[in-house]
Image (tube, rainbow, N blue to C red; front, side):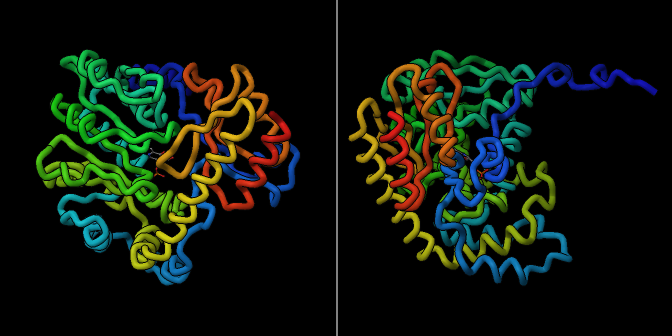
Length: 362
Ligand SMILES: Cc1ncc(COP(=O)(O)O)c(C=O)c1O
């Protein structure tokens, strides 16, 4: 039987949905550009070049994979409570902070509702909004990539439900100030402050949760703890909102291996922090090396990546040139970022390879 399934679909998903611009794995990139997989330098995903804690391997090997995980995430919430200083009743975990972004949409956004996004920023908010059938109000950041609070206030209307702020912002690397976040919270909308890169800057709005029921802070184990492949993130928010999101989340969303990995990583946090420090030091070294190259501006960053800007029109060609040498960075084909790419901070050897390659190409 032939059925026109589009007639049964939610109307906003029946046409072409502009999907998330995701990354291909290293072996696929290697094949596309004719380089050996072992020569690939992968700097396109803001991943951790030092990988995960050695304690994770044993923990995952011994995890009780035959059982379903704890739907209430008790042990992880207790461990994260020690790590963050917030009570476990303020914490909920997702399969990556990506899943929590989806859950926040499910909780608050109906088709036709509106979200506010500060362009340029992480593409996931925008993507989830399209999937939810929401309208996206893109408020441009200023020439220094700062949030324009007045523009945000005037873009808000009755249908605006959520405002997203990544801090440090991906891909521009700059932080939102406490005043900017307080100003957004005063609008009475849900404000999602995405602190995916918290460990690389130490700046957080966590202390504002006690006073603001509309604040949702997101964090991840993907970056500082090197667990991107296991998909573990967490949210911090009011106790009431945690309870409500628990009620709608897939019950077993954090798998047993991910739980074991998170607990082992938090036990080994001091060692992982040493790697974070290496990355922060390397970020400063890469920034100055890039700024010495003719025609290159490297924006200061508080994350584990930097945004590099080139003379108009050159970025796509430089991206291709690097890729042919096996070095993969992130190019964004958007109006605001057309002359830029973002490079994750790698090991000192990877920094040298990137800078040498760029020196040749520019
Ligand atoms: C700002 C920001 N938030 C969230 C994420 C996704 O984190 P996760 O791996 O926990 O889904 C990223 C990943 O690059 C990011 O840059």
